[in-house]
Length: 196
Image (cartoon, rainbow, N blue to C red; front, top):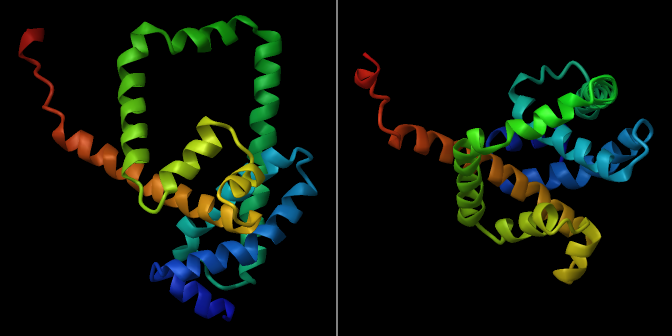
């Protein structure tokens, strides 16, 4: 499949195009990112985020360069953000250790209701996912299994497990956004009368 044909099929939302996109670009992108990020887990997370960002931004791709070059430019921004966040955390928490406690307190009982709503939305989205996507996301993010451990559990190849995980993330992202819309629409309007 040629690059322009792949782009058109991705824009049309063809499932096979997403698989082809992932299988073709993920290994090259991982190699690119690992030249700048030593930790493989961090590199894999960045690669998945970059591929999702690329898919989200694909309608804005002007074809002034090769698709992979464009994806690498997105990766450079994500890598810079990764190091920026890491540096900020290190500086802030080393100079102001009380902020670590403040962050912990921000998740205390005052924020429990909002946290509970997010958790409910998270688990509802996970439960509604098709094709075993919920199961593979649970294994990766709740049970903290590596992609290889997931592949072993499903008796499949590393690439197949990685591809399914990628598709599951996309499905989760769409479902989570939809569940947020649904919960906003079903929430009763705030009653201001008791404030007067």
